[in-house]
Image (tube, rainbow, N blue to C red; front, top):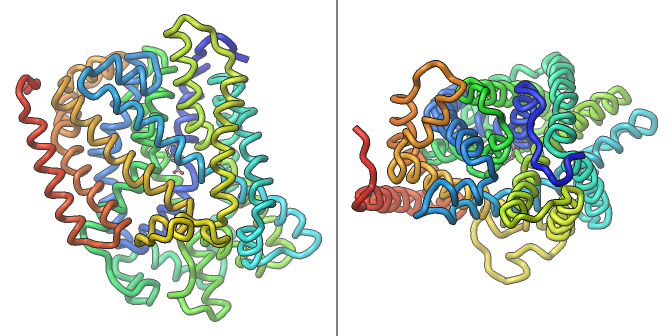
Length: 506
Ligand code: PFF
């Protein structure tokens, strides 16, 4: 165990598997496939890929480089790097903390479903009603949440190479194999092709009645952008933290590319595993397609549970494999979020000349997260009368009807896009792209400086204005508000960039 020292990755492949582990998570499994189907199928995929190349890749390189250059997590990394915006590091620590308050609850549900499906092989596989049962039973929800946090604690306390890297080296290949098994089973179900059409054919979601109206351009952009950020674990300090443990020999652009490609690949594979099965099962059981729940927690824990239920005893086996796969994805992401906070404390101690006890720090971090997560668990997605809207008597479209959405709004909806925008402002305009590119150049022989500069200076900020505006508009349910905010943000951004004394590279 790495007490009193920072540690580092054992190998580049170990780092890559850990970074892919952070990226591949619940977002890939329940977010991407449904959003793709709903927001234009193949066209959405193209928008997503363009954003991944011009925005995701550039930010991934920047975060890894910033971490490696400063050798510390987000708080100190920003403090060492910029004077004007040093406090943005706090956003990159608050966001993972907030995300963990609900991610851990969902991870707990995965444990519950692994157990119930396994028992189901012998005693009958449960159906979707089991989800309602767990949501309304705070004690079970809190119990499995605790179990999930104990698993994460045991991994994080092992440190970078002794815990996180070790877990991902086994977990990621296992996840891949299990995913292939589930895809084969899903695609051989009768009517599975309807699910494929929903996912890939533009406009099919409306034509076949899956959804009633087509989304606006702003909302497609915001959906693709928000999904890309969340899925690639960007703007949450995770990649800065993982980058800070990387050696100078490693090739950052190549690593970033591998992470982006694998994350997208797994998102598409997850789509092939879950959507065709969910659609086929719905159609085969006479459920109108518009009523099949294809996204969010309901897809994972209700719709798919019905698929396994309808397969008979063998469904228990497939269910067990599937939920272990989702659990691995959730754990590998959660440990990266926890590590952001643990690293922050270790680095702070080092700065003060104090030694750190990683186990102790990890216990405290996990305990605080668990305490708040208990609220999310007890809330049961708003089932138990303690949602913010119910407690405070104010209802705002979509973001305060349950504690999960409430924390998600602050983290994924606000801290993440604002953090990314400020990052682009610092690198592109305050410090100049060369300040980060000089780090990217170490260990990389090619030359992408021009591409990098254009992305970070122009494309990222403009796209981020629309993503932030779209996500704020989605939370408050008004497109007009969204466009107004997007224009407002662009003006503010432009004004800030014009501020005197800022670099302007040729
Ligand atoms: N990328 C993870 C997912 O797709 O579920 C979630 C996540 C992990 C977001 C780590 C941010 C992060 F720092």
